[in-house]
Amino acid sequence: MMKKLLLISAMVFLAVPVLQAQTKQELREKIAQNEQEIQTANDILDETKASRKSTMNELYVLQKRIDLRDDLINNLNQQIDNIEQQIRVNQKAKKKLQSDLKKLKDQYARIIKAAYKHHKGFDRLMFLLSSESFNQAYKRYKYLHQYAKYRRNQASKIKAKAEKLEYKIQEFKSLKNDKKAILSQKQSEKYKLRYEKRQVRKKIGNLKEKEEELRKDITSKKKMIAQLEEEIQRIIEEEKEETNVWSDLSESQKRISAAFEKNKGSLPWPITNGIITQEFGEHGHPVLEGVKLNNNGVDISTTRHSKVKCLFDGIARRVVSIPGANLTVIVRHGNYLSVYSNLVDVNVEPGDRIAKGQVIGQVYNDQESNKNVLHLEIYHENQKLNPEKWLE
Image (cartoon, rainbow, N blue to C red; front, side, top):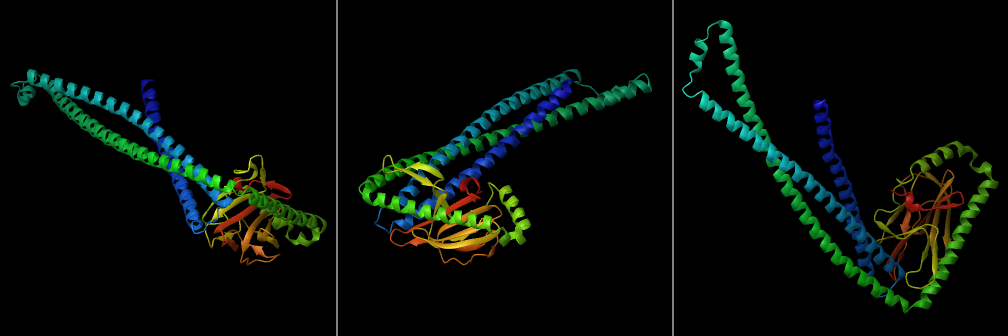
């Protein structure tokens, strides 16, 4: 029973570092992603420095960078907590090893002392030759052999324990150094966060002086949203009435639809370098009090010359020009639709088969403000979906 308990304890002890390593790796990946997205935000803001015009998108990028910085600090805190937990486990293991090593050394010292006391002037050969019988001589030989083996085993155990203890001491030092480095990074990130919050407050103050212009922009955007929705509804209604148009593709479209749905949460980003600056759904305006904004998709801010790639295999259904959204490409994936707005240099036409990851155009660059924003929507027929939940 005791052996079974020791085996279970050993398995649990060994499993803990594995679980911690996985958590450590996950946190490292999250932190790396935070840092990459913050760098993207910095790149976008660097491009807008050339423009003297304060824009809402610049404010959205600044606010997004604050959210990313907050998330980074939270992940750093979690990493520190994990390291502190590992340090506590390490300290307990180190104390246990120190205690075991002391016991082994004390035991070994007693063995050596007893051997010296009892075997002083002892001749092993004479001990064997003085045996009264062969059987007694054999037993004495076995005794001497087992005693020597026992001493060698004790010495080996001491050496092994000493090596484990040294490893734990080095591991402890490494953990403390890791914690020190992360604490230093956290302090640096908190300093940057305070500075960035001041930037946002200043930007909001500047934009409040342009209330009339902001309200005009909201009205213009609402018209663009309504026109885009109307275009999507027209596609859906046409395909309901003209079912024979896609009858030869019905089976393949069913497969594409199922595959699209299966890939929820792992669809590739439509651009290589971007951050979501306006999320799906209804949100309060960050400058105008009491004003609500509704987004049927997500707005992804990016840098100049960003290529736009199709999320999944599908068929181009519309390429339309919408005021305020430049060119819009609508792609059908079975009974799903993906919508890409604010494009230029579109290289697909209605009816084209499009492969996953295929470039369909480029994000429009507003030369006055150096703004580059892709608007992305996803529909399940006429049901609006949150694209952020579908992207990897």
